[in-house]
Length: 541
Image (tube, rainbow, N blue to C red):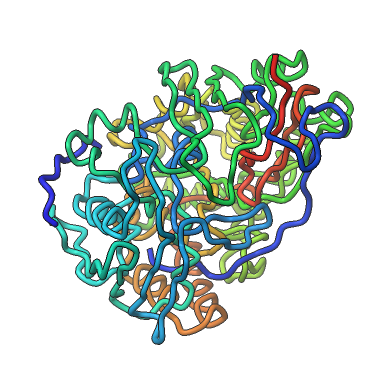
């Protein structure tokens, strides 16, 4: 069925294995949910950010909108707290050769507007998401047969509707764990009403997940209510969820302590890391998470081109950053210095990749490399690091810029933006003349998720516009390798290229350091650090 698609303003291949993460936290006797009883009726409040984009699977790729989409849409599969894959709408996802896949969905499923969820609902949604390079999440379909990243094309993917509950997918190359990727929000189905007016839909989406959107008060709150039509495994155990935008992480934490906020997300501000376990007791959360953070230095910045001078300066800055000191002093040991471009909780992680020595502080080497760069073209100006004020980043940015001043003898400073959406818009428009803090919360438990999204030429989250054909080829080969182990070896080789070019400097791995109020129970944070909101119980007023 052909659609008259209206383009939206704005812009994959392989997951490499499931993981199991240790640790979760749940409330004691403070909540109201009864074991085995009916769902509680209280509205749970969760710290969030104003979404950067409309609430659409094709364009949302940041936390503020992602957590909302995760709860208003149900895809084929979802990830349990430990990263294990589980079926949501899928009855089966099967292939005999890892290239041609047959997908069957459950019968009788509906969107919240009472229209049916069919195989065509998935096929048309995927065709749309892959149709325009302006969509941030278009790259997720790069291994689908028929995909084109360069031009607007309708119905280009090799997808076929067999019947109301069955469709097939033809990939460009075999992909053994293709099903693992399908838990990401871009693979959600869309109702007929979406295609009538995508722009309006993005402000008031109609989904098929555990919750429905009740209201979106921009820069304030997004309110969700339980979806009575949803009968899947993620049935809400509360009366609804309010995602509340905060200007600073400190303000959210203060509200948490006074029970004016139920759940903090993404975590405890640096100013409270030393005390939050004492403050919250058994309501404090400390567990591993698949979150990587780095520093993007775009090649478009003066003195940081893809040439000898730029490469020397990137190495110098990396050696000048004492990650151990920052993670110990600023983050109270709740971060771990990064030595690669993935995460220790992702299958295939290796702390001895060739070139990773650049992540270890060495003041003398940093000074020497900077002097070599100055011999090519003398440095002038200020090295600036942009960050969003609502994420608690100022303390570490101040610490790193002071290290650069002291070690390299240059001027360095932070550049604050009020919120993540504002910063992301500047980055997206390429109007920011600064290095930027970079973070990646894994969308599914696989190394390709970050290696493809952040560094492949033209990828939606490639904020520094990095491009290296050798890297692209290695990652593509790794993503289509016949086994996870073989793919991970190729991913290691690709990371060696990254350590040579350093488009982004690895900084540290994050843990989930969070907590919840005395008013809620059954609070659990997943492998990706997000709270599993449908499980939370709270007494009604």
